[in-house]
Image (cartoon, rainbow, N blue to C red; front, top):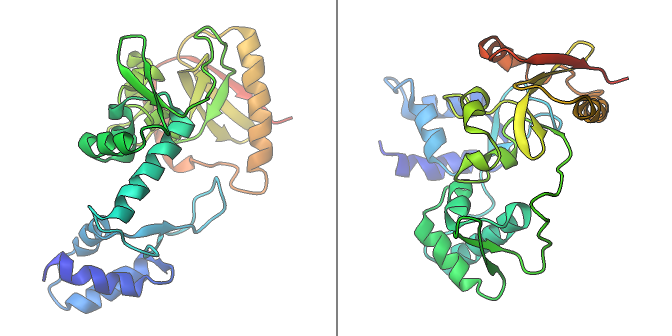
Length: 265
């Protein structure tokens, strides 16, 4: 039986949030004996399901849950075109100036469709020229900081949008660090951001935030990272103090660097 026949029934089952186990049990019952063991995984990737939250922000729920979207736009109709334009504007508001390739990479949408959306937004976006002569797009009236403007140190979470926002990741991640920060399965580790570039990683451990720098950092930067760690510790208080614990085995594979415990006190 084809996925196209199963999707409408699956979405009906998921009108309200349902756990992965509940939907898998429904599918097994629907397909009957002899169902392929990977059927639920394949259908979950194909169907337009949304992840439903199962825990607080900055915490992992004990199990995944899914819900059907409130409506399903049809590719090519006016609603889909307008939705894409809204997506482009929101992307530029967060990450502009950016190229067509940047927007397409972040949205996982063909560049040709992004170009059409930008053409339709003529007057709502501005065109700029990048340092290498590339065409950039942005929201009108946005400030353009001087290239020498200092960027304060930050602790970025796993899968932070900034790390995934651009087609050329070197804009944020030095090439020599990319393999340490973005794993082969696409996951990205929580990172230290220093002067606008990834400089290391961090994880929550008993007693505070353990920060590992891939290259030497001056003391004033460590002091600012410690201030960030104190704010983060307050955010995690009452939630999961050891967030990302399931990924701690990756730290065994990191290159040697300077590691400090940044306490929340």
